[in-house]
Image 1 (cartoon, one colour):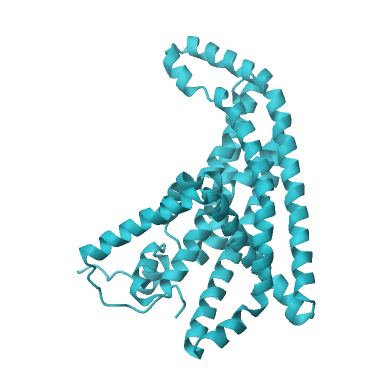
Image 2 (cartoon, one colour; image 1 turned 90 degrees about the vertical axis):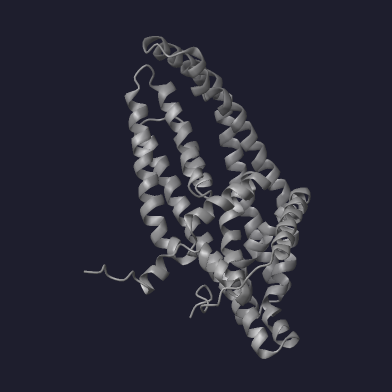
Length: 361
């Protein structure tokens, strides 16, 4: 029996007092997380990265007998250089597009006015449909977000260094601090979280990279300008489940509209191609790779996206799914809360084990 498939438990009554205290505790925790996000967000990012990098550090320390300080320093330095390079490329591409955007905005405005007069669309409706006024500031805000993210990377790296230094000896400390049975439970919990989050983030990175490369190649083949920028945007936003791929598809369609105006069919073709790419990779291939491993309900993912996105913005949306997976695994190891872990799951594996009875003749 896996950690996410707890043994059936008898239903327990929850008193109104306990329920009220639980709701108050959730509200209080949310307020603290909102107020302390400057510290909590880097801490959570470092915690997630530690699960990805811990196997490398453990291998260097345990197998190759590297000193822990040297192993951690080497891994963190490589990560820092890769993050700095990626952030610099993203920032430069977004700034290049922001400088060229006013010319395309004028073309889109003329296109909106032309089709509005041809189709007798009220000006108020056209104003609501006009997304061009929001794209420029959005690009600048996104660029600032990445710069702030790189700035906060120093704090992330500090937390990450201390976490990785403790990783090789964490299981030894648990065995020394607790009984054999309880230590085994904690070790199983941490190992399960590490496997689940590591598998999810690794697979998500590969899927996002393939999505970005395919979008870049297809748009370049179709002659859409800033094709590399749109591929890069698709790669980054693909880390936000469901909503990210939709948002990443809007700018290249508007670019095709402005570039090939007054002909709208190239933009229709771009929209159709992006839809096929996102549906193929996001709805068919990605779930086969990591969807069943996480065993999370789509409703739970949506709720976590809404909550963490509201609480911490773009960073919260990026952290939503890993946090949901970690919370589900932790709940599965607490007998009294194990049914909540089952309810957070997709239900597919339980439906396979308990198929519905055949209809009565």
